[in-house]
Amino acid sequence: MTVKIDVTRRLAEENNKSMDDVETHKMGDKQNQVNSFTEKTDYIDDRGKNTNINNAPTEKTNETDEVTRIFRPNAGVATENMNTTATDYMTDPVVGWVVVVDGPGKGSALPLGYGMNTIGRANCRVNLNFGDLDISREPHASITYDPRGRAFYVNHGGGKNLTYMNDAPVLQPLILNGGEVINLGLTALKFVPFCCKEFDWQDLK
Image 1: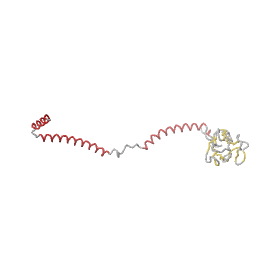
Image 2: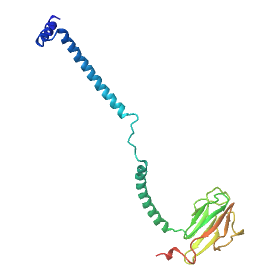
Image 3: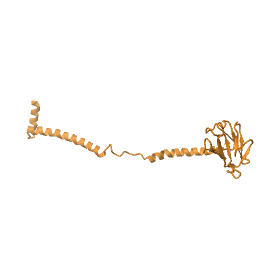
Image 4: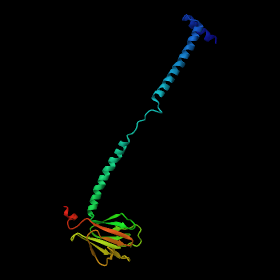
């Protein structure tokens, strides 16, 4: 303690200051340090308040751009698939349709292709798997398109239940002109041709 007082007294004498002034100066330095620290703390706090981290607008990702980025690759893939699908369709293009106008599956349309279109509940080219149990699983009937004669025919298949066209039983191949109603079980199909005498896919080179 004596050494500290002597050192302090000597410093005071050298600077023509009293010991009390020196002590006060030291305390002031400490206070200045505290104030300096507080100022720094306040500065940091002020920055926090100014920037308002919690309420600061975060960088928002443009949702439209996200959709666009996702959409463009998918659009390219879709185009490729469409081209591939179009090629696949041309291996067996649509020549007509049968539309379910009554019974299970009402409102559905099923395409017809070249040659024989077997019709049944399963394992057929035209599957009427809508729940009509009066239709045979194996070919109940068939609609045939002859590309040479450009004509359609309906015929009964191997079903135990008969096939009817315009309420008359189909006991032999009958020609279809368009608009006929074919009945299988509880299901009624309306025939809608696409190919005809005036048009066939073979005409497109």
